[in-house]
Image 1 (cartoon, rainbow, N blue to C red):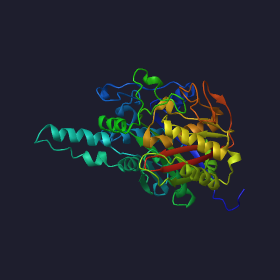
Image 2 (image 1 turned 30 degrees about the vertical axis):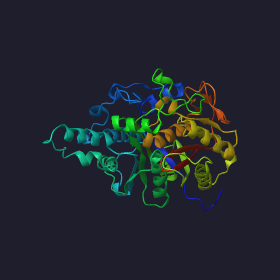
Image 3 (image 1 turned 30 degrees about the horizontal axis):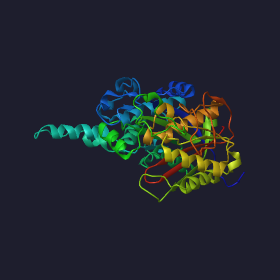
Image 4 (image 1 turned 135 degrees about the vertical axis):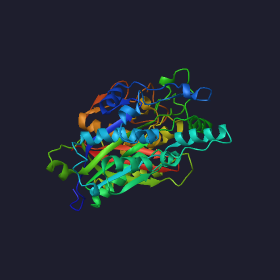
Length: 410
């Protein structure tokens, strides 16, 4: 072990709001069972792709109840609900902590795009309609982070990060830096997204990114499968409480896992297509391993980005094979949740943490036969018992954004 390594950072709380369920336990149960959350979506009726993975039964008045929650966009309401679960799970009381030492980092690709679309439609409906005065406070992407700071009295750094579908992972990596630099004692970090709107769905469909399997929407998202034809839009939030491991243990809390390393890179290749050689993804993996003072041989499990796109899955699998070989188990949760976009990096990192804490690797839902050239150890059919020594969670986004997190047992 490198004696100059920074003090370990612990994951002490998790919160999830996903298409698999509201809360950590509901999400974990469905992900482990491999049951897809996709369905024909009435709100997308008439579009080229009219199915999605929405959060089931989310009621802001119940799940995000707080003063002013009705004045938050759906993505910020998701973040608030997930953050409450994370803080409670960490056994922290925001009424007693030193708020000046508590930071917030939230990742989102779009912010309150649902509010923006609704208010734009209102303006177009009549010459006399003006947008709500809440338009900007609800739409601006940083407002989820601001809402969490208000809710929890967090007066430290309050940041929004946006790296497309890597945003949630980038938020966690940024939080890791805040703790290592002693800028904060606690950071509430993660990702939130609510992009299942008619405009966004039409845009992704026009790009050819979405599956067209409306006859069987529950089978449409099939990461790494030979029959994959695109992803399914999802939404949700994943939030973490991160603190130094020594601080957690001093207050009698056993961490769920350690956030051991973070790596980021840019493909510098194409606005939406991944680098065919996977060079940027490889650089992020190797950077995360170096940051964790680990080697490729230490990695026993990977929670892959695994979007169910033909090119993306093939390139990711080839990169994993080249860097890590075929030994680590590999999963992707997007067969269950769909692609939750800017929230995906945090939601999937939470599943990686639970894999370490519970010794179970969820299967890749809808994986019948791996596609050509995909030669990695994919977990399929049923969950697998395994307690990894080191787990990676990968997230890649438009713009060539790559972010990889390394987690170790506590």
